[in-house]
Amino acid sequence: MGQHLRKFPLDARLGTVLGLLELVVAYGGKADIAFIARELQMEVDHILPASTAAELLGVLEIHDGEGIATALGIKVSKSLAKGKKKILREQLPSLEPFATALVLARDNPKGFSLEDLLNRLSANPDLVEYSENGEKLRELLMDWMIYTELLSYDGNTGLFKLKARKSVNSSA
Image 1 (cartoon, helix red, strand yellow):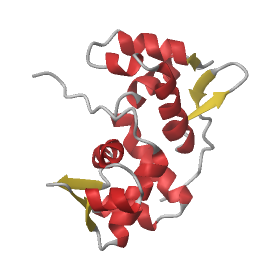
Image 2: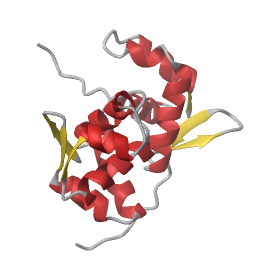
Image 3: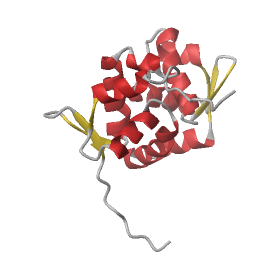
């Protein structure tokens, strides 16, 4: 068996993942996913992508339909927006389709289009499902990669680029 790709659910929205995490933490760090879905007034099927995403991000563990907040999940929950962004920014590069988008951004400093990413993803049989729904893929990138400041997006040109990061001098 080759390298195992960690594939992020195309339908996992940032707000739903963070909302799920917040509710699990609010219920003592352990809660039934079906119960949480009812609390969020969602169908269980609609929360499953968020629970899968939370597990891939390392913020929840799912066992027998129950979500259990990890130490990292509790840290995310207790963090302000800047801290949440930093933690998520560290997690996303190991997950697809974010890993491919970051490679494309590094290879194309002037930016890449959604079409470029769709072509790259469709070339990999294990990632072709991402290339079959361009609009959901765009939403996923906008939701996660713009929020975490891994990428920036220029609406005029339709190009994603690596986000210019301010270097911080630290003597730690």
